[in-house]
Amino acid sequence: MSGQVLAQVEGVHENAAGFDLLAPDGTGYRVDVTDDGVFNQDNPLLARYVEGRRVVAFISPTVDRLYGDRLRAYLTAHLEAGSWSLHTIRTGERHKTLASAEEVCAIAKATGLDRHGVMLAVGGGIVADIVGFAASMYARGVRYIKINTTLVAQVDVGVGVKTGVNALHTKNMFGAYHPAHASLNDPALLASLPEREIRCGLAEIVKMAVILDGELFRVLEEHPDAFLTSGDAELETYIIRTSMRLMMEELCPNLREHELARLVDFGHTFSPVIETASGHRLEHGEAVAVDMALSAHLARLVGLADTETCARIVRLLKRIGLPVYDADTCTPDLMTEALQASWQRRGRKLHLVLPTGLGKAAFVDELEDIPDEILRAALDALAGEEGRHHG
Image (cartoon, rainbow, N blue to C red):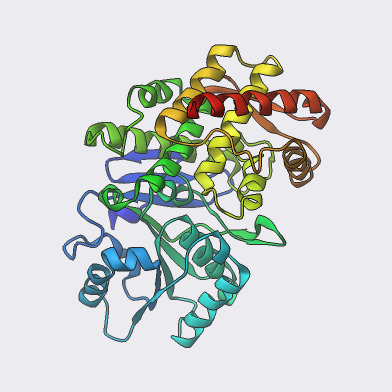
């Protein structure tokens, strides 16, 4: 059972099979990385975590089409007949709702899931968010397991403890901190992802590089085609594991966000409004990319970052194929609204994360430190970037 032995020393500890985290508040959890195929019947990883428990599994339609038969065969081989069931769950931000979480709970109840049982979420971040939130509520909290099938999920949702759904016209308005019983990552699953999904995952990796790791940023500059056309497994392993470790190290001391100033909120101040106002025409990672580009220009205009730092951030996003501007949502009114919403949500402090270099960032805490004329100038600069990109 070595895969389930948690770290006894506070912090994040990495080995070939994954990462253990022990937070100062005593919360511990593990993130596994397997190269043996998570749905391979000879791989005992998932079986160890579900052994002796009733399992109600939820899978996205796309993942069901790609891997559903293999998952059913795995569960059939390792679990008693009648002790598990598998259900598809709708994806897309429009379906990331309280009603969806309630539906998950209703299915769990109908299948006889008890307090000892486990919900299994197989898919990207939305499936993990909905099922994780349902698990946090069901019978005041049951175990859940994430099998993360997208790049965003493996480097972001899959390594943290947050769950949530959209409500009241606000992204992730309802949620809970509910550490997973297990979070399983199989890099081979990424091979079946569409390019747009890969790019969205790369946006979250760029985020970590900009705020924490200049070397990772330089590697991405040299290989903007990573996970797309590079085919370099060693390079991709370095990128994904570095991102996972950085995210976990950053989350660990502040797992339940008692401190509302968080470096990992880089790219997540303007993006919730961009994403929602676009009617989810923009994917989460695309909205984050636009936010990072806007934040890079703000950093330049307020004197926190030099012109070269700003240019390199925007250039990398464009080379990956991510948007850096969206004319419909990048309006002064909407972006001012985004600043005010963040200020309110973060305890009436802005805590806007702006890069000060590559691998370094700082907080701007007061709304008045981003005056209207600076915001407009940054938006104008981005509009110009987009014009040159299409020109």
